[in-house]
Length: 112
Picture 1 (cartoon, helix red, strand yellow):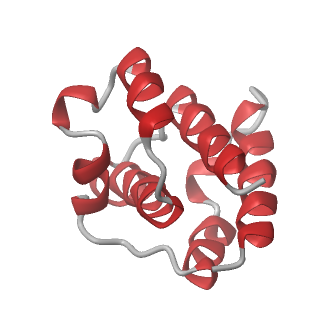
Picture 2 (spheres, rainbow, N blue to C red):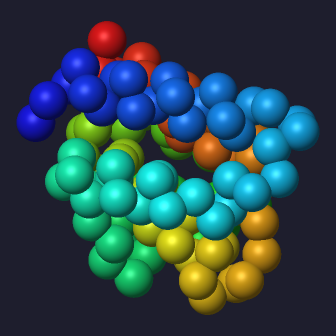
């Protein structure tokens, strides 16, 4: 696993999710292709559930607490991609920016 590439990925997408003027972020093909190139996998939400559980699904405070305890870069990366896929392909809605800001910040921190 190339931690430098994952760190750069995290910072790049963190920047996109933080920008309120970004409207097309939920449709970014680049996000999906970069996730695949880094080895993150879509697993029908299993990674997300294994990290956060359904109780924390829409609660930013819970996500913050739980994400700070996650040590495994691969699991966290898979959870981020699973969440993105859930929103864009199954829920057909925009991802929760706050969730991605928290999760990508943690991933960047883990891969310094």
